Length: 419
Image (cartoon, rainbow, N blue to C red; front, side, top):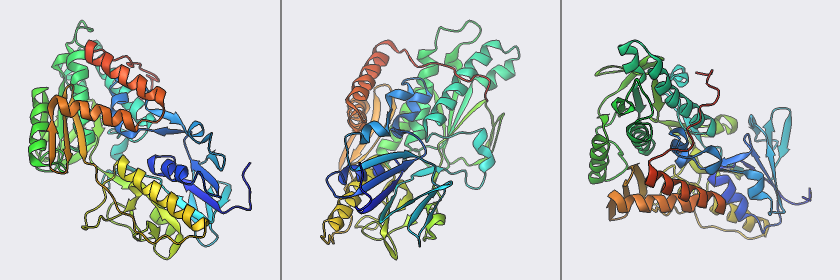
């Protein structure tokens, strides 16, 4: 039972950053409340595998209550936060409010359509289990509808898939869709050949994976092209609709669009009236606190943080975990009457992305790994970051089974009446 006499720490968000902050406060004399509008923690880097039927949702998610169950000083509430009363020190969630002495905001980011929010309905992104299952339904229905189509032009449109964005999510999604069409579904239809599907990846910049060294970027593009993906770099999207996508180099008729081109922060800056960067991320102090509000910390993807050499801290899971651990320990020290002064220092563990079966790229300092060894490294890293021993074993076994058989065991079409 939590005590109201203890310092109250409210954490908004049950992602990597929020959970790590909660765990870092486990031994402190604090009354911790974690708020999230969903009841589960989702391992976002593997959402594309749910979308392409390689994994089921339960294999990459875990109930937040189960994670916090053994931490006696923490409680979990499923609540949709709508604002923050900075002066009154209360978190607002509909008709309810939650007072705090220390506040940790770790609400993450959402899709950015660069001022064209109407594209969201036809070009969904990947940030939640719901997004992934929606995309899975659209992908699988495209093949089913193509099997029924009488018109050749309509069949061709149904078998065209466009991924907008050439970052890690876009590259991984393009490779996974290609494998789904070329292998997992091959031989299962009678009127169509899924192997004839056209997968197009549109990237506005000059190369895919721009955060990686050029040699690994070139390898990733070459690997995608060997898989049959049409990679179109230096191509700007001008419009998206239910029938395809328009670019500055021409129109692509397609039934299924996937948005992987950009993100923007959740409205924390509006809630706190804080300064933000171009993506809406909140600019924070070196200890990740809000300027002028030392009791409020903003961490994870929603925070605009610089490394010691002035580079932005990337929005990846290791960075979020490091921020959460740092802030949790800082608040624990304050509660214990100590005065920590060390600024947050991010340690970069590298970049990695998989291009498909037996192909991945890894960049760590001066180390460059690609191909099958890179793919094994990618698999081990992602299994390590999963929460729960069961999920690690299940995912590892599912990957082994998929590798040996080429089969996708989560090819369920649910809510088929929804578009």
